[in-house]
Image 1 (cartoon, rainbow, N blue to C red):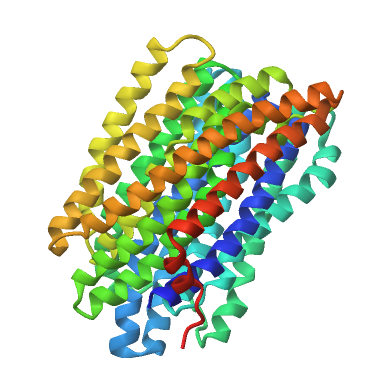
Image 2: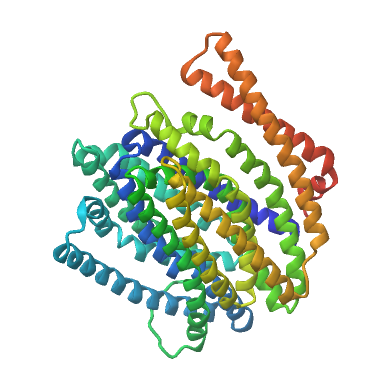
Length: 523
């Protein structure tokens, strides 16, 4: 089971890695074209709204409610009935989301007509009107991905987000220049590219579903007991995940009040954080939900603890060193990735983004804990516990946001918003882990402690090597007369390579048997 879990996580990880790498490339190009301008900040805030609804009615909440019910229906009534259930869910989603988009358009026009909302809000509203329909398509994509994941198919769902990044990147070079010369005009063209990407992503799902024997027929059947049961599960999950996304939008609004550049700087830092987070933690989280669900259906909730421990130890072993590496090398990495000659991302943008990155970096660990623990509650069809904990955590997050915005010095206030998110997420994951332990009769705390010790040892070594290697190589580049991007590649790349070598060596000598078991071919 564990090797199958790893193989599935590898497929998801490869797809997610491709998407994250292309996402990083798109963000590099955004830095070159738009830097940390108001246009970029407004776009980032507007794009968070479809992502908010994706969380409310799509990926997280939908998977939390749909995957266990769909899995149970497949086992008890067969694939045909499960396909009918999926079609009814799709029909209801299309109705609700279509109505939401229409009401959203009406609301935006009404607010702009009745109130003087200012230049910043006007920019956000202008972009949001174009990107709102993306909500419908991406949520239906999430449904299709949930069906495939439930049936043990992870490749197409894992690689679907790549399409958004491809269309986004092509739009930067083809559509944006046609819109005008200013950043305000060009960013508007990019909003249209996002809307088109939503259509493309849903279209590619249908052949994959037909291959599995499912034809998604949109139906609205109010009396379906399974749909009602799913909605009862989905409601708390949507609220639980949605309040975190609402809080993210609030963070962005607070950031743009602090400074025009702050939301853009936070987004650039988040992109660097979500690269390793998406490759490892999101991959495990995606695979863990159907795995937990099968274990729950089989009546073995205690096995969930062993699976969670296995996933947590593997995730932590990678995320700890990655977090300290990003923290120690925050400014060199930011400069290397985003600052290019002739681009709009200047030295002040480097400083602003690197400060946010340094405070976001510990989040790699705490975000991973959340992604490993929460699917266990959803597999047990308990969506209320994460909601109850999440409400208090959001209150804590918002209080910390206000505290740090008012007390931290200028130039660091946006970094305070990042730090507040990390602290709140740590509390969230820790409390949920304790509650899950009580729910399933205990977690293997000793194994978790051993994994934490191993990860801590490796993290300390990687951080020290990264710090000293960067300084030594940078001094060598200076003595050799190497300057500019070449020196950045040498010093930053050399420090990362040195840290990676130490990571592999320590991992091999301290976990050799475990690595051999993980890499062994299944029987």
